[in-house]
Length: 292
Ligand code: ZN
Image (cartoon, rainbow, N blue to C red; front, top):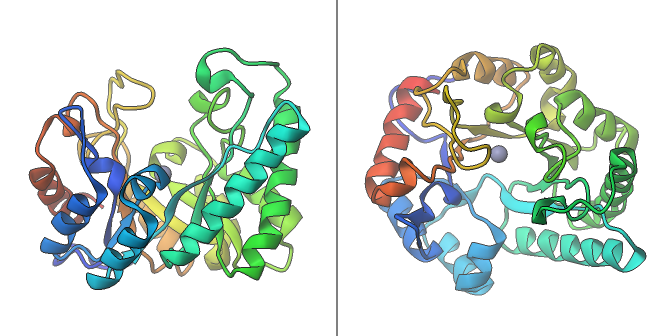
């Protein structure tokens, strides 16, 4: 297992971590500059942040600073209620692959979606099995495009509390079942993003990380699970402030040969988004050394 205590060369910042300071959207170019000034070598930006600044601008900035992208957030949201909706998801996901290629991302992260309409507060149906089958088909179709374009797809299983609205893939086992069904040769183009926030509780986690192996471990996301958690989406903790044994999980992932970045991804309306971004990044660097 790599020693992170001396430096932060394997730290990546998911740019959502410092995007809404005191409710004000922070421009991605400013976030990139703040990361670069601190010797942070990798980021993982969101599509809407990139779109707001312009893809070519961000592409140029990333190159200027020699930054790596540990991932690109995000594709997915495959389920729909009709053919036009499925086609729109297909087209949008292809654009996400194109953008990820332009930015030279290590992978495109997939948050797969679930019941159509649920995210807006009114699910159109209750057939989660149908959503899972649409997700399966959507990933299969996108995988062909991703393979041609050499862009790995990382399925991110989300905590079951998001099963209705954000992702009907909720465990590593489910995600790896899809990988095995669609990519039996373990090509490296389809795998998982292991986010400790979503999977830390799973009694099968260690076994499923072993099952994934190096070819399928495409990203490693860190933050912490607070007790109590006051908001299902935007109350993630800084590493070390909660109950997740992050070094243990990192040890399991690295035992399989994963040698990429630890990507800090914290959505925190009440705490970390209430501070200036600079000190938040400094805290990420410090906790990366002591709690990851
Ligand atoms: Zn994540």
